[in-house]
Length: 512
Ligand code: KIV
Ligand code: ZN
Image 1 (cartoon, protein in one colour):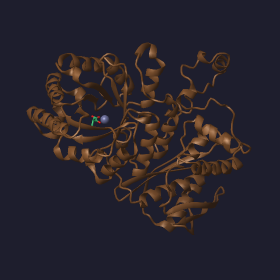
Image 2: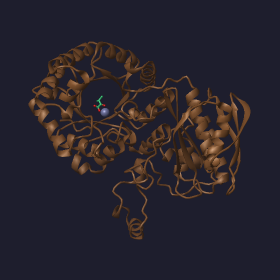
Image 3: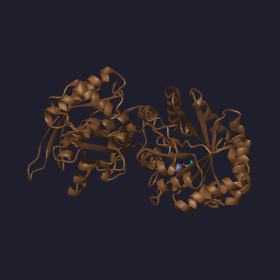
Image 4: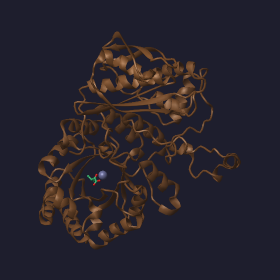
């Protein structure tokens, strides 16, 4: 049995299925590049047959990424498989992921197929796919709630047809660690050709056990691939979280004794990127990547950590990308100190020009905020590598007046295709007035489905990070803006969301 644990990231496919988490092609490409830096083994880039937009995303990622295997999901039919294979053509290393439901409930109520029909379709689809690609993964959807006898029959036949990875999804997050681990163990023991495939786990988090179930699938079941997402993003309560799985296996190597290809120093930057892109804020007490994950508040703990870090720390913050350098940057910090901090935070800039423009933003922020924390820097550079060339709207300035007992007024100056315009409005509060001021000019008619403010580094001196989610004509987009002034951050976030609504980039619902 191999001792390498394969990390299969599905942030761009299953993660994107989270309501409101859909991403543009450029955003997906940027995250794929970050996943490559993180040294993820397999990136599930999308579901090519689900829409032209997703086809283009998978293709673009297959063209750009060289180090990770690129995978596309496909239903078990010739059209989906051909479409996925076409999108994957440019990939240096490509995988096809075929799925078909096998639980009695799904077969009868959703697919309206008999078990024999499902068996035939699974077998035929893998046979067809094997003529096009060598690396084939098969997933019996709702596998954990499927009849084990039937599952053995299906999986034995798809392995015989050439499936190289067998993934056992707990699609609805119903499993319990010990039971799930034994379920996989049992399948592997009963299926005569089980050793011809790598076994994989794919757990949803409905009962909060996705990580525990995945680890049980590995330790008890012998799985050697884990399917997961950054920040545990995914439908309903989400998927198994990549950062938690990876750090559990790394921190408890004494128990798991497995090797990983992941460069953990990039975990934090990846987490921030996914959170900013999707607008899904990471809770402060989230393991590994939450703002408090390495903060020691109580006096006893602080005292212990100062004497010996391992009194209360089981992982080193810098191993996941938090900077070990506690020198807080400020307006006297130079370009070199700033660049070094970027490196320590695992932030990769594509060019020196990107570093320069991030440094200008940093100086601007340092003029308004005396101490610049790691979180500020991560927010600042978050959209540095996205091209803003074709963007319609750009923030210039804002003034607003609010006084107790009076209705707030706002005036916002922004550019529309480079030309300056001014919108004015009143509103219930300064944020409402500012966004209405923009809308008075743009007249997008978009409905706001989410507005959230998050203090990036905790105090009132902190930058506010605002997420705005807009919906218009069936499209849902997220805009994020940050600034020490939360009204300005809100206006920036609103304009960013409007830019995405305007862009031709096709939005996709990953699983149709
Ligand atoms: O949860 C699930 O069953 C899936 C499959 C498509 C693998 O995401
Ligand atoms: Zn899933």
